[in-house]
Length: 278
Image (tube, rainbow, N blue to C red):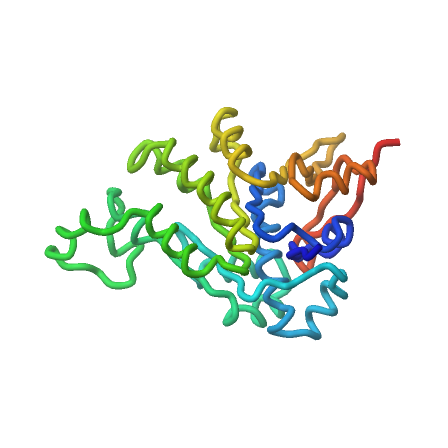
């Protein structure tokens, strides 16, 4: 069965090459615990396959026999532009990787749609300052959910799309939209993704959600990967757990894997150790 690689070499090898095509995966994490770094690494390494095969071989190695690399990689951000995202990626992994993929990842900045009904000054997020007449027409623009839907319709088929982030939608829910609209979009995304046949990664900060909200997002996704800080003595370790995932979790259960210890290294997000039931 074909799989779309996450771009995390050790994880992909354990789950027979990656995620089943058509999957929507929620990357739910504590702040700094690795969810965003996983997102950056997945986008960069999947792009590196074609952008620089030598670097890909150096930092990732050989693809699993079941792995089928997505045709394109799209990075959809609600609040940041390309330069800001690339700067953040450079803090996560070697600059050689970021430089090699910067022109091949397709970035989409939905800041205008996200901020248009907020009190945030237009010149803070728009590339060009609008005149008063243009500002008066803001109510005619599509909202951020419409913009996201249009972009996915045009670009998600057979591709990797990372969405950064659902947390921003949660922040806007009380001001610009209903929470029910977000959960309905996620459920629709799950259904549409099965037709698109690609892989969609959704980042969310769990500290911004109630337990009920997180539960609804889990229900609307095909898989949930949880990133946490674990304290032991005077140190804190990053850990990762696959909470639920069709076609993937069963493979980990066969191996009795319960938790991954993770690190952030030159090639981005990495699995450093695997904990098994003994």
